Amino acid sequence: MKTGKTNRWLIVLGTIIVQMGLGTIYTWSLFNQPLVEKFNWQLSSVAITFSITSFALAISTLFAGRLQDKWGIRRLIGSAGIILGIGLMLTSQISSLWMLYILAGAVVGFADGTAYITSLSNLIKWFPERKGLISGISVGAYGTGSLLFKYINGSLIQSAGVSQAFLYWGLIVMAMVVGGSFLVKEAKLEDSTHRAAETKQKEYTVKEMLKTKEAYMLFIIFFTACMSGLYLIGIVKDIGVSLAGLDVSTAANAVALVAIFNTCGRIILGALSDKVGRLKVVSGALLVTAAAVTVLSFTHLSYGTFFACVAGIAFCFGGNITIFPAIVADFFGLKNQSKNYGVIYQGFGFGALFGSFIAAALGGFVPTFTLIAVLNIISLIIAMILKAPGQGTAKREKQRNNNRELHGMRPNTRVS
Image (tube, rainbow, N blue to C red):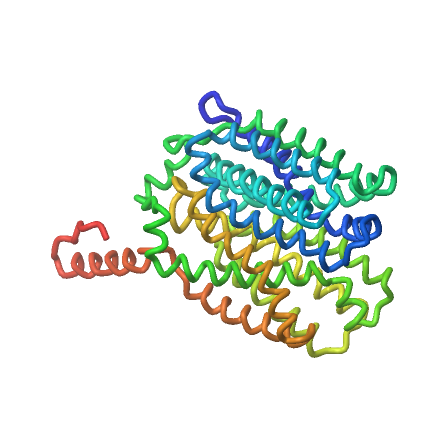
């Protein structure tokens, strides 16, 4: 399929390559223990690195849209790929925790988030008629990168050692992101938003978006979805051992299960949202998540029950992560998609941090899961009543015009 002289599917291919390279940062847990053994650091101190990476990734999305306006999409993604690769390669030379936090945490996270949000938002602009499917393909590639590199990085650590593994990882990621950027082309607003123009959709700036109540309601839902999924991903093996009574090796299989179902949820629920409605899919995902964490909290877990709950939460988390970029585009327009979604995306960063903090404050899996279930029910109610800004006003205006016509009066042509 082509738009003018541009083959949109080449842009899809380039974005997939970029996203797969970016998604490799989710193999970080493989590096924790080898770093502990090499430098005699505490495991908890090393594990903080990924929290810093996730937070820097979220923060970067606030600035990525402005950088894209100045540099252009291809130059920005290529530059982010170079910085990401250099950050990982320099990590191979570190000898202190602070250098680990700065390079593998802040630098890698900021570069990763910059390329992630801009390449995803740009691809959605190229396919305004298939936002959910295209978002699913892009974000699914991000998840696939983490799944594939679980084996690649694991092999590099075993064969070359943890420091050299960082060097090779950085070279590979740099090649993928920079190489993929050459296939990416910036979507022009006039080429990608004809459907929005036909429906007179308002193109919100960040300032205008933040004046709507819908932006804050979306943030609450996204925060809940991210905290639920990210907390589970971080401690899934421990849940299997503590709550389901599984041995360590059997519980470790849940890590691969999470990656598989997370990726499947991104593709399947993203495409489904185009057909049945995005907020309906989000509502269903929140309901399944609430049910699954309730089962984990209050029932005796068998092998099958444990894995079913874990698979359900991972599947729904992947779907929600995918659908939200499309929801933001539906609600606030495509013109400022990178900037607007960057604001809502802060729910990811706060979700990554708050899950661990809440668990530490409440003192265990069961009370934490109980709170997560309550938050999912609250977010479910919000999702069920939420409508795009001005949609309710437009419907009321249409109904008033219908009533005026029934009484032989001219309809009101005022635009709400």
